Length: 227
Image (cartoon, helix red, strand yellow):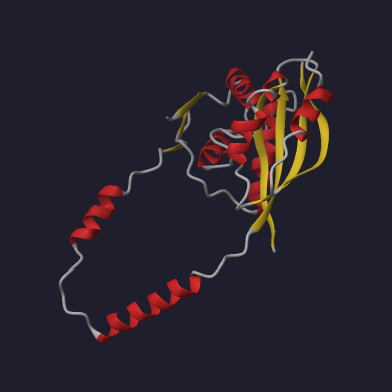
């Protein structure tokens, strides 16, 4: 479902964007996407530091553009009062069907095709060997319900989640505004063993941790090594 923002050149537009990003790290989903690039491009200048959430998001996207770029598609976003927009991800099924119509399934196999088939078979056989499992470093933003939430117990609830392939790292409390602080915590995961989406949905925002945790966002996700 496409997201719409209005007049980001005005104070009111920036304020609404700031409120939208209060509980989110990105415009859509759990990673930076073309939706973030569209909104970033619609801002004529860096936002004022008084808009804490927009400034955090803006600086993060700026850093990604300098370091690695952004390639995820996103859900589609429109900025009213701006020519910038990203369409929802396209359905490629029709194109694939058209391509299938051009394939001759019963034509005579040439020597080149036989050689290509043999090479593909060898590649498939080689790929049957066990692949190395990679590790990733993930930075999470974990937000409490309000300023009365016991942040010590919130962190204890987070670290009480123990899974094969999950290692919790350093953490710190970061002011959000109105007396509320969020927990930023690093974790290292083995990619084949831990799904970050499942970790968030099934453990961090589910009982009993959700007594303290209102939401959880991925701030950074980086591959670190293979072993």
